[in-house]
Amino acid sequence: MLKGKNIIVTGGAGFIGSHIAEALAPGNSVKIIDNLYTGLKSNIGSVKEFEFCNADITDRERIAKELREIDIVFHEGANVRIPDSIKNPQFDATVNIIGTLNVLEASRINDIQNVVFAASTSVYGDPVELPMTEGHPLNPKSPYAVGKRACEDYMKIYNELYGIKTVCLRYFNVYGPRQRADSPYSGVISIFADRLKNGKEVIVYGDGEQSRDFVNVKDVVTANILAAGSGRSGIYNVGSGTEITLNGLIKMMAGILKLKPEVVYRKKRQGDVRRSLADLTKIKKELGFEPEIRLEEGLREVLL
Ligand code: UD1
Image 1 (cartoon, rainbow, N blue to C red):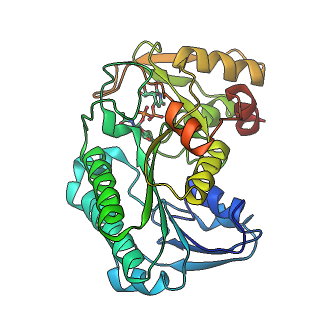
Image 2: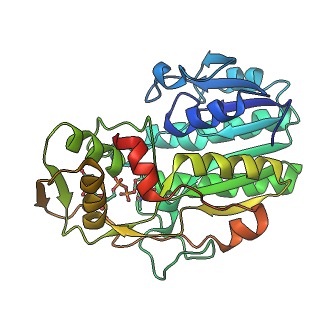
């Protein structure tokens, strides 16, 4: 759908950014910016024809230079570890807020028309009603979530002041190939997949009846491409529109691997939300988004 464009993906060596770069490299000129803090060079091994810049989004001058002659920015670069944002909020704000401002300023200076931003469902906090629409009250529960919310406001202001089309995509629980499993705060599917495949028990925090809306990274890529080509500005949920409990998830994963999982239940994690489910009415209507990968199909790719 996007062809012949000059594209930048910040955080392009990360889990989601690398999938966006991989999808767009054929037919477009793709530049990846990543400081390899949590991103990995190996993530972009399958991306054909791209330019790699080892740069930090906090480096204002470098970012302004790298964004010259660019048509579209996919801004995925961020501190993605919520616990790190609690331990070191200055670090999180520097990367996520100042880094985003650097990207927006560089976009303004270079007359870039489209910026798509990786926002987060963490801005909602505890759901007061389900499914959650974009109008759901915002109640950030971590410095990370506060930062993501601030960035949404900056995106809006840059649209209003300078006419840049800015789209914020509030990702629900994204999963898929290349998601890291090496921290206790990695996405739960990557952790469970890693442990089940290695014959280890899985650890569930709480009773396992908490639910999540897991969206496949390929659908997230589709949402990004639709957003960039839409000519719109605004905030959109990106989820699957379905929810599953962790117990249900474990059953599904064990069924695919044909094994009997060993499950250990531990104390519920502080700040854990009980349920999560995206209302996709707005993104379906305005961007024509339709999630295509069913959870079981996506899990097969991760597990087999
Ligand atoms: C959080 C953020 C979300 C972010 C995501 C990425 C909130 C409200 N949401 O989601 O914005 O995109 O992190 O990391 O802050 N769990 C286990 N065992 C494990 C690992 C996790 O039981 O080994 C449980 C967690 O306690 C949680 C569920 O699985 O109940 C999902 O956890 P996780 O994948 O870390 O994501 P969230 O906490 O939902």
